[in-house]
Length: 189
Length: 179
Image (cartoon, chains in turn brown, red):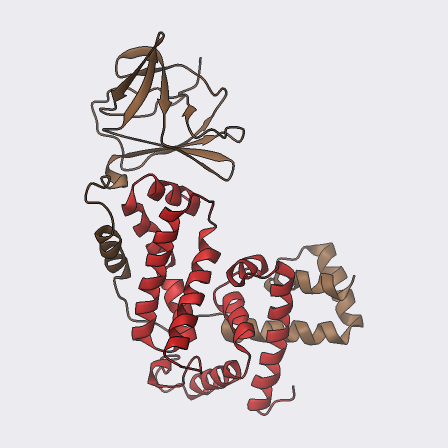
């Protein structure tokens, strides 16, 4: 083992998370290297002296202050609180890169309002699928509010959102009235 | 619980209230960090608020992927530097009464240790001091420190190791111990 490798593994060694054989190799190197012993001692001392917060700051509601400024700088016609009306669906769609995706969803009128927030993982088997939407059976729902992030697509549907619905050969716009996600939205499609 | 990336996606889709979630997640850590840089509570509050506002503006102005935590520390560090330079405050972490909050009342050893830590930190160059605070106090990994400071992970690792050796040497000499 070289000194460079020791330095890389130092945090794990110091935290006690370096596993058996790696730890043995690390300690063997330490027994032979004065410079690394000094580094380890210094690291541990810094960890001990700096590792726990020593200031207890007075509690100030920074969130309210920040959000007041954020909202003041934003349009008054901004979206409603996301936890009240949001339906968040994360799709495992590593291959999907289009700004507009056609996703697999079954959306239906629900007697109950949507939960405060709902996150579900849905395997996206195909970029084009059929779904039932607001009484239109087996139509294709195109959701435009898709953001790619770290190989995943995040789709946000809210009440009041307009979605593109392909019924037969006609592409029309429909408004989401209430929405929910069924247990297996892609099953059978 | 949505991760930072998902919350950022929500904000970008128009749900600005979701930003409150990010503020709540990082407020305490960022305040502690800024307090360690400035030693002034009022300035800490002001800088923290300014940092979060800059972060929000950055989120909505760009569509690029953001790793929020190191990015926020970078904003906070730069904001603190700008303010301190502007106010011509050369010494970070002044030893005033604002810093005398550690340890139970009457705990002389804790107070002395704290003073020795503060004095040792003051004698370490700014960049290395930032690395020490980010790694040991804020718990950032080498790669995250690299993101904050715009340097490589390897460079961040070397700075942390060098700074911790400097810190030990200065702290021990101040306490009368053998380095």
